[in-house]
Amino acid sequence: MLTVENVNLHYGAAQALRGVSLKAEMGKITCVLGRNGVGKSSLLRAVTGQHAISGGSIDFNGTTLNGMAPFNRARQGVGYVAQGREIFPLLTVKENLETGYAPVARKDRFIPDEIFSLFPVLGTMLSRRGGDLSGGQQQQLAIGRAMVTRPKILVLDEPTEGIQPSIIKDIGRAIRYLRDSTGMAILLVEQYLDFCRELADYVYIMDRGEIVHQGMAETLDTPAARRHLTV
Image 1 (cartoon, rainbow, N blue to C red):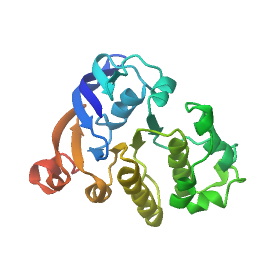
Image 2: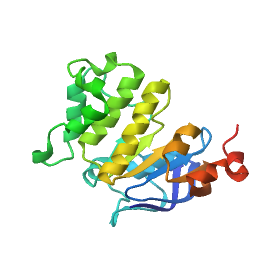
Image 3: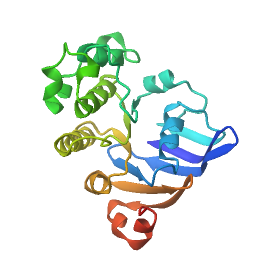
């Protein structure tokens, strides 16, 4: 599992994370919710190595990730789908997927068929440039690219942002399939409450850089949880 223990993170003098602790277990979907600017994306940057932490520890399957470069975390099995998708707009869909080869052994450098089973549209657009895809198609491509890396944990930052409802359902089905078929851990940052309610096994709510609530997904409907989610 992924274990985040008492993590602090600063941007200069500003502290974005304050003693954050959480766990994301294998075979479960762990969802982190909260209003804008409460530290959710900073938490994922800490987990994936995009920004150095200033205190605490991050471990995955018994390996300490502190100080480890992002590409080495990818080799440890940490797959990342960034907010805003961050696909390569001038590369084709096929080339974007092939960029996921970097952290895997040579024998695994092929695109798994399950990507096209989950997202059939990608199979019909392999020669199209990534920048020509719709936002929803780019999101599917970003998830597919992360799957090419053969992750043991998939870290997703607001995958429903700016996506039409039909594709949100496709993404939800894909996330559920990956949990159930591979047993990977999934750490999902999201603001779409219904999406988390349907998918999550366990939830955390953040406010002002801290964890202020945690529990099973059913606890999202309690007054204490809703108090931290309403604007």
